[in-house]
Length: 390
Image (cartoon, rainbow, N blue to C red):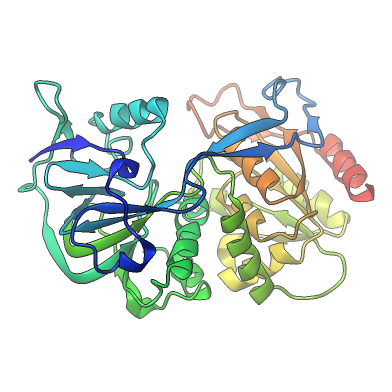
């Protein structure tokens, strides 16, 4: 099967009232139908006691948020993480209007490595014209009726689920699609609980199988609203509603988000070598230490929603800052530059007061990313103490 990539925004226009009845491939674009510029303010501080100079150029910046949209496709095939094919075309949940982003996407899909290839099985055509999809090599299944596709990149990652998948429910609610079944990768119990808290029942869920080809009578696929990690206003409002519904009242709450459990279970190589020392020190400052994966999602939301200050090493758990109240103080402990713009964009778009503290990577760690690191504990505690007084 030969496929050509197409930008969803080039499809014929649909109206929100015809999303469930459209008989041709079409797209509804939410107003405004142009790129939106989102401003990220600079961190309040960047502490670098090990003089790594990782983020010396980090400051205020502008993010470009593409138009949000919903694609309607009769009789499509869903394959890989998030790709949809019909006739001789395919697209995903991104707009495809930025040539640089599109070139990067197509280069990734041409890879034989399953992760950048997004488990699509796509292979560049020998003549360089599009991609070939071998539909005979994968199991196939069919879903009758109309379904909403909530699939996106990095389907098993919790942080990805928060900023890529859950915001799609804004469109589901706004355009009165909440009664339809949804296709989503939700094999993690935390994902199921998040969906339940957001109003999606387990009976509605069709588990996405990234290793199968799924055909449908019709799909409605909301777009990726936050491709760079910077939440648009609609996404932030959705998270704040969830926070209000699950928050608790009380006095000052100081929260430290620990990764020690992940380290013990061997789930991450990004180990803070002296985190036990950090934990003992922050407990002395009156912090509550949590390992979010040990809590229910309702309890996690409540903890972040009622916190006055959140401190922790970067990782998916820190994405729970989306549930924090505007003005919450966030101290993010970073050790590598790879995802800093997504992290700081998220913190800024949640209207937190955020700062960065940089740890020193273990020079003997051979890994290219997610390497072991160590922090200067006295310097960290001095910064936390100063930050709390502001």
